[in-house]
Image (tube, rainbow, N blue to C red; front, side, top):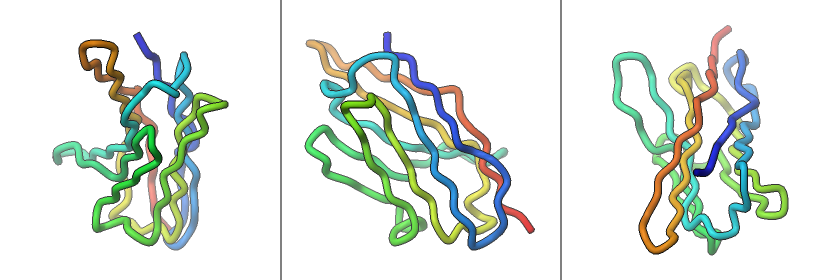
Length: 118
């Protein structure tokens, strides 16, 4: 069982920046995919960005050029650098991990609130 704990959310003005982090309870070296999702009240959960164990990344069109996902295997931590934030980025952001040990296991963090408002 991998536990994921997000941090770094908060209130920021439009155009500002935040960096989210997701600390895993064990080594992430064997975790094949890690990702950030977000969910606004009344909407479904959407993929923001993902990164594989080979450091291949993928971004939602709405955040390309503004957000950067990265992982530090030595620190067992996933990051999301968010720049040029917009009000529409307001949501609860969730950390996600897929681990394959014979079978595939999926894990979610508890979420961290990001609010972009003046």
